[in-house]
Image 1 (cartoon, rainbow, N blue to C red):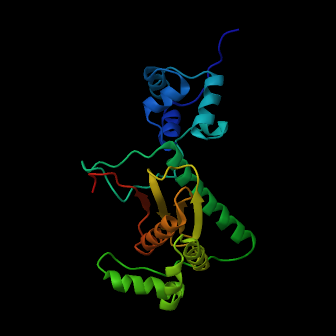
Image 2 (image 1 turned 180 degrees about the vertical axis):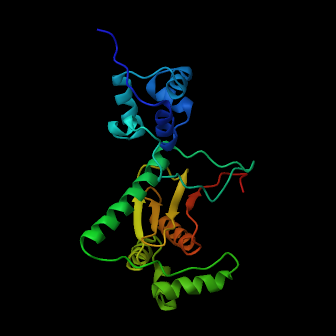
Image 3 (image 1 turned 45 degrees about the vertical axis):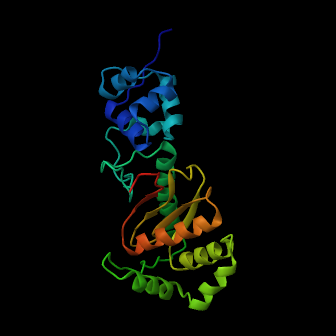
Length: 242
């Protein structure tokens, strides 16, 4: 019996790969195929077999039914990074980071559905300031918004590991209507965290692989980006980058 080929649209295959964070070469290596083979699937008229399509679903973390859509889905967009390469070009996000961003969006949607089922209305995020605001004033606005006094801040000075501060800031930020998650898929070298600056249920994700004191810094940093109303990924810098 000959191979059975999947009747899927080439543009769906390309969208699935790109939205999962894979370059053509990365996907080809993972599939143990040549780049020309995958390019043929994504441009037509060639198509993957059913077993090959199932392997793509596992690689791209998409249900099989998505590949049979007639149009490229709209809605989820990978957010941009806050730091760029010296050339000014945007960075390529790894599949792991791309997946964490997608999961954060999905968790937020689930939280909104749960609130709706409970008959509760999430309150809009109430803190906002621009890039021109004085840093000292911005810090005061954040502390006032979270109900943090200077004595509260002083109490963290003896917490060298940062666990007390991390737990306290996370609780206060969540009480302010922000979703806070910790990512486990990404490396510390790639990203310290990211922010999804929605008006309702904005979301912060910090890297679980970082030490608590580093996570505390990342949490405060991403929270500031929510106040700036700027979604994005905060990436680590290597020597020589700006």
